[in-house]
Length: 471
Image 1: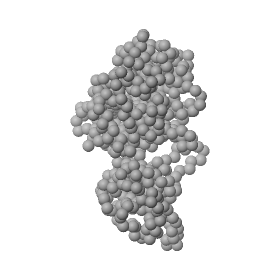
Image 2 (image 1 turned 90 degrees about the vertical axis):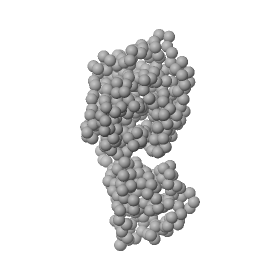
Image 3 (image 1 turned 90 degrees about the horizontal axis):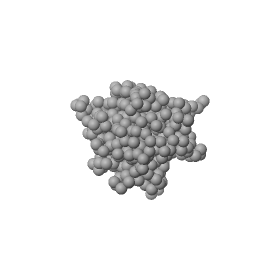
Image 4 (image 1 turned 135 degrees about the horizontal axis):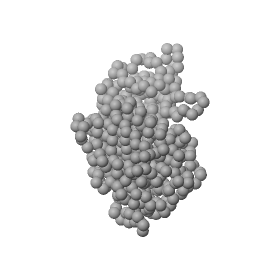
């Protein structure tokens, strides 16, 4: 979809649909139909639309009056307007003239909302039915600020859509090889570098990762992407790590059959990291960024790991596997050790790690745990700016007590109590030398039911964090 900025005033009889964005207490639109629509809104209503006659043809016109011009109110109003707009052929959006910052934020929010409304994943359908809307023009007196907002929003939307596409792709297509090939192609498209390490490297050096991968006929890969955008090539990078289980059967600790198809989304962390990395490279952020993605399947064949097995992680830690369905932390711990070689200024992993996080936070917020409060505060600030909600959970030393094993240095589960936190506590063992944060996105990476599909979260959060670091 194309987004453009127009500095000129809207013509009296524009082609296509027109949406007027109105702030409370401001002058009504000059367009008579729009002014009448605005006046018809009851208290609490944010949107109204109609068909008017213009030059002998019907012209769709609508008004949007958010409750306020902070992000949350704008997002709610924009979602309603976008549901109408995606049925139009083209759209002119007249932004409020009273405030430059409000106009820029509104433009950003509407790009993301329109992008979500027109998104379709129909690659496996015989007949594709794309949304009608292909173009939106923003009319504003603050062209420079709005154009900057559009450029930033388009990069965010690119990353979100890439994340959605990867997550929605069927697991017999989106294999570890497919994920590695896509990551390489996306990196090289924007001038970044990619290194793909194969199963020989993993088998020889990454015992925890290999213990998960060896049960599948699909080969595992370790994906490394590098963007050197900082003026100093030796500046410590931000390293993003994403869990890339392209299908999770649970292994020998087999999952129930109901909704197991949704375990294709267990690579949501990988998809979001690849999406955020590609968006950052597309935006040419002046920052050094590394993405590390361990990717494999978790399958129950005769060579798969068994409960009771003990494996040796990349850093020499021995791990007693009590549940093969707690596999994400096993591939992540070796990836986090691998990431340490870059001496990261900040190390962040994203993973659909625990069902316990859904019990704790539902589907509204991702869980945040960190060994560095300054880093956690930066992510919380990025969450508020981007609207991609996270909530911090504690990581007290006492939680590590649940991971003690009679036979190894650690066990891979800590029991039912505080399952999200003990999973993070397990990962923290491998990140003690770096400022590290863990995002558990099990409740936010995809939706079930009628609206089943990848959400693209937390791309917006990660990208906003990177933008803040680069500023």
